[in-house]
Image (cartoon, rainbow, N blue to C red; front, side, top):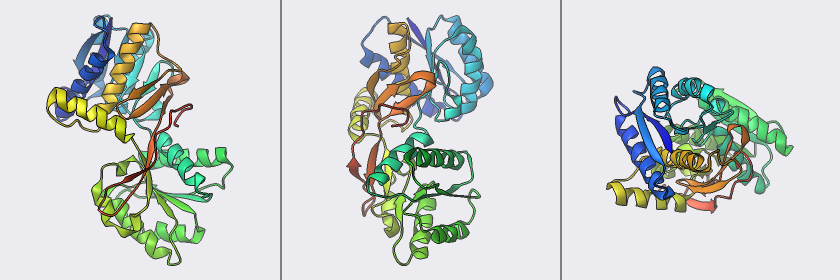
Length: 329
């Protein structure tokens, strides 16, 4: 029972591709079924390369596929695999690629928004705002925040998208006029620190609760900004990730990059599909970054934990990752 693995094994992304292949090998070992064989092919980090790699694994008789890495490569691979109705577990976080027999394994913006909105709402917060760059990530955050607020019966959120790498001071002044209870910051690193400081200055009577995304995970520099202390953000389950990193280090002698966990999950699902003869829709399993459930229509539900930033940058666990029961839990 052969499963395909589409990865960038040459070019600038080759080191990442090799680490992801190592993670996929670890997943195959953990599946414990010697009948399942992994067939890796190089996408060359291009859509044309991904399409060629998809055709190559089809020629090898694969019954499911894990990968490729990016949204454009995924779209190219889907075009090849769709006619043969081969299930694909893609590494991208672009939800637009999900559909019949195509599951998106990356942690999506919508999953992040739903988790952090739920955590903040439990604290009684109702009026939400978003300040993010006007790019694909920021636009997806905006779409998700509008949807989750409507589903919860909360007031429509204030959405402010600033030009990428542009000045956010004017947007922060607009935020102050709206008096939100919580602000989701769609920036990471230095950008998040700068925006948080501006928000603190614009709200002299007390800033709203600050929220972040998985861009904040493992970024200890954020704890250097006083305005970010106590800010909440979603992230992978620390215990699950720790177990994965320990197993990876024992097998390969190094710490895996963040995206290696996605490759582990995708190959595990591809292998299970080969073994069971169909995608495991409705089933849940413990992935590299926490619990995962496969749903109809290409949806993946992930259990994300919630963390709070502390002085010095070490985040503390506020809420553990729940077992997901619906898309984006």
